[in-house]
Length: 223
Image 1 (cartoon, one colour):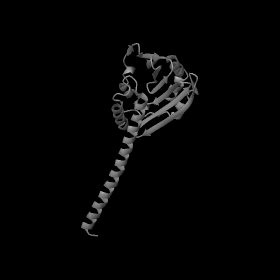
Image 2 (tube, rainbow, N blue to C red):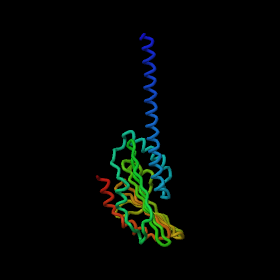
Image 3 (tube, one colour):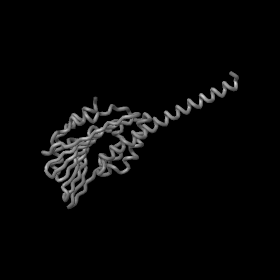
Image 4 (cartoon, rainbow, N blue to C red):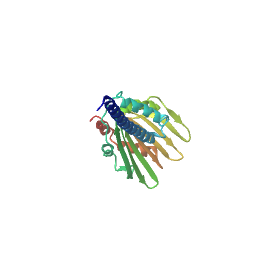
């Protein structure tokens, strides 16, 4: 084979190698992007409706995802939604669990678990939601103002306030006319637990929270 043919052969092989590598890199990048979008969407859905909970959360999580992928955030073993489900009560305020949905996502350092359980009885409905934000937990605080500030609003319609629940940061809100409200608790600076209800009193919501062992939830994050 002449030097010219050898040169052409090497050139073509190089192009093929680069092309294959480029395609593989592109596919990997697309997988990472899809995972980031999926996890950000899951967490945003769970937090929607909170005081400052969803505003700009998608962009915040995307930035956090980049940091995680770049190794700027410590890798944390995520808790499976099935392990969190084991902590859910079969009944809440006398209502039976009628449905649940969970998902654990993990790719390229971007991890998270979300779990939703629905309860119903008579004209009452309640929902319990849990998130393990894993390694992005601390960065997530910037998207939840109530974890670092005081909120206290009240009118004839209802109220919104920051508070503490068993020594943990919490946010509660209630609509008197609709008899609906929610309470959200930040557990071990990584788990977010939200209990909301319709056709219920705030005491019912707090009763629902009392059925969940936050101590056991925090222990799951220590494994």
